[in-house]
Length: 497
Image (cartoon, rainbow, N blue to C red; front, side, top):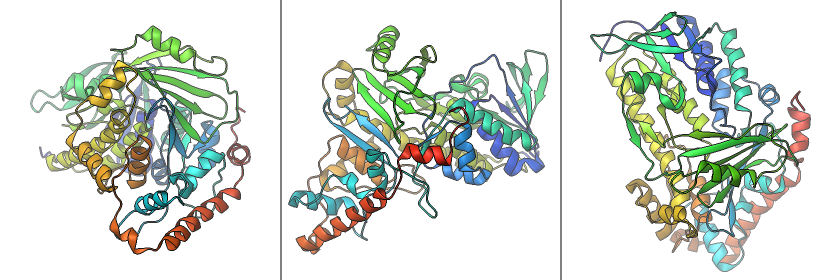
């Protein structure tokens, strides 16, 4: 496909987090040469439960010039340094997957090799003691300091985040159109989307369409029949129940992920409330059973009624098809376990802006966009599968299935390398780095058989001093920090508090 028609009119179908992230970024960064419209209906609710993020959101906020304090106050946000995985390895053991970096590497081997020998010798403590974000999570201490690495993320109210971004988009000329899309009109010659018909009778024409219509994929799937790659044999959970409760304790700087009989429960602390939910597999648990399980394991009073969300894990076979780009849930869904949904929205938007077809559509650009997206989503998929597959739980049909299911060859290769010799790697453009893979593989129970021989070049006392120095630096830094919630009160207190 090579069309010489310049792209001037961009239509975003759908609001919510995905729609307004796209609208804010395109209008502010490319808007001078474009006419951008966003169609959304007040009668169509958004999923709106993606309330935990990862540190890559800083990239998006820097591009848009978003002030962290203003954003956090406006969205009732708290800081997030890690995810606590409870009962995942088995029903008695918990671990943290923290942001940041573990210890110090050398040219030939990562820190985990030095730590493994130190543990073997009896003078290394838990691996999280060598990471500032890990220790901060456990002690509940954090502050934003000048020139620090941006290794923190956020818990936020997704609905308020969309409103926050909407203001930015409207300041830069976005045209919001209220209405429900009833028909997608295609060009009879090339099959591209020409216009969207609204229930009011209004016809919205465009050159490029961004599908933010959620799981349905009204444009990318219903109209263009792009196809879907089903991952439910690897990620069998297909349902979630979400509910909000009052806060009963000081918010912690991490997301809680608590493994249950046929899935897992999330607990996300905001400044003014707590987000709760249960992700589960409907083959092993009914909606009513899941609802009762969730209600039996929450704290505080209900602020909303529990609502069930149905989904299928997987991805579109193309994320950019003809003149339509799918962003957010319309492009596919992995699941919320590692809080990657907003990241993948962000990556899709940034990638589109980097490859924006201002002078007309070029098939080579579309193919490259799809290849890069597939590579990134496959990496995220494998990382999520790891949590389910590498487990010692055998207490239910669900966990027995997960532990015995075939897994992608790409993941099997990573697991084999780490189990054999503690080796990990990260290719360019992969989301999860070596520290993430190390923490989760160790946390789920993989014990490497050996470490890199370069570690043996250090005498025991030298290795002990090396480990102790890193640990003491991390502890000293942590000791000087305020409590996470005290810092929030000073730095970004919500007006709703």
